[in-house]
Amino acid sequence: MSTQQLDYYAAQDKIYIATDCIIFGFDNHSIKLLVFKRRVAPFEGEWSLIGSFVKNNESVNDAAKRVLTDITGLQNVFMKQLKVYGEVDRDPGARCITVGQYALIRIEDQDIELVEKHGAVWHDLDEMPNLVLDHNQLVSDALVQLRLKASYQPIGFELLPEKFTIPSLQRLYESIYQKKFDDRNFRKKIIALDVLTKLDEKDKSTSKKGAFLYKFNRKKYDKLVEKGINFKL
Amino acid sequence: MSTQQLDYYAAQDKIYIATDCIIFGFDNHSIKLLVFKRRVAPFEGEWSLIGSFVKNNESVNDAAKRVLTDITGLQNVFMKQLKVYGEVDRDPGARCITVGQYALIRIEDQDIELVEKHGAVWHDLDEMPNLVLDHNQLVSDALVQLRLKASYQPIGFELLPEKFTIPSLQRLYESIYQKKFDDRNFRKKIIALDVLTKLDEKDKSTSKKGAFLYKFNRKKYDKLVEKGINFKL
DNA sequence: TCAAAAGTGTTACAAATACACCCATGT
DNA sequence: ACATGGGTGTATTTGTAACACTTTTGA
Image (tube, rainbow over all chains, first blue to last red):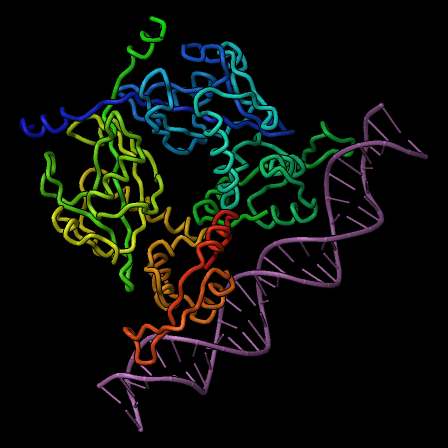
């Protein structure tokens, strides 16, 4: 490397860069968000998203994966970048830029001990506590993004267990969009997507009659996602 | 601030953070991208997106605005974050994370002297030279994003001059999506959006008959964008 | 036997697509 | 008078939205 080059880079500012995860989960009833009590000043003890600084020798996405695995024990989770929050004064502790990333996980898969060890708690969207810094904003941006994405990709499946019922899928979408859908039309549209495989088992946990369980056909599903379906509800 | 806090922050890594702009423009014929010849090593003299390091005392978005104003002379340009590129080895010069941001500008509004002074050149999408680092990737991601966004917001208007004709708007969309649209259906859909005001003038630059010029109604347009229209073509 | 959730079809309306000819004008 | 791009309408298909009753079964 030339001296000129070194000079050029060397004259620039280095800045703290962090990543914060907006972790969505679904418990067959409503959609929830994982937050925990911050353990460092400023704002120690207040509710916060889960995050970490990006280290010199790891990529931004790896940092987010690390955070997610640390707290839930899960790997290979669906995760997408949301946005960079780069205002100069967003963190009174120090100039720090953060990359918001939202993740969709199956709550039942989490490592409960790990989650509890970190003091992390699942909150319903309509019962979210106030969060530190600009984290309320990150959450609200993530929700918009989630709804948008769910409208052109059947993204919601990431939040469901292996086997699930149509009514439970419907509750998920109703929870994401905060509105009721017509049972018949919902079922019709989902079936028409042709990505579900009906099983011979029933889930009787929510009714006496029981609802048939479905899996989804990963191949057809991936093909659909790739093509970019238009999945309006 | 407590010592504990200072210790916590102080123990973290600081990293170079940059922003690179994917600048789209339209010249009434096809959609183009502004790139320039890199002036610092490594890769000095090769084609590159236009970017800059983020300074300690400026926000990430302000840095992007600065870059855009420096090179085009324009302010208040439509600009959106695309994605963060945070791989450890993406820049052989130094560990450097970049925030890709795409901008839509009206080519006719640019300050030509400034653009030329920087050695920046507009390239057609299908004649893009190879770019340094991961910039080819940024461009291809931005295109995907642009197409996606154009499908739920009439984003294309940002690229047109004050007064424009329907055929020119159609060429813009055809250029974005790289396919032909039916004249009658296109016109029907655009008119149905109810955001255009027909003027009494004609533009005769592209035909003998001349095509009526339109402006758009910023109020109706903003309301539409806010609601999040579904603008499929 | 009854309460509670699961499952099923049809009709009306709205939107998207496909398609072909006349118009205005400069050369 | 003719070549060139601008402008218009309709029929068909497709998709979306609205709507009510029967089924199953555990308690």
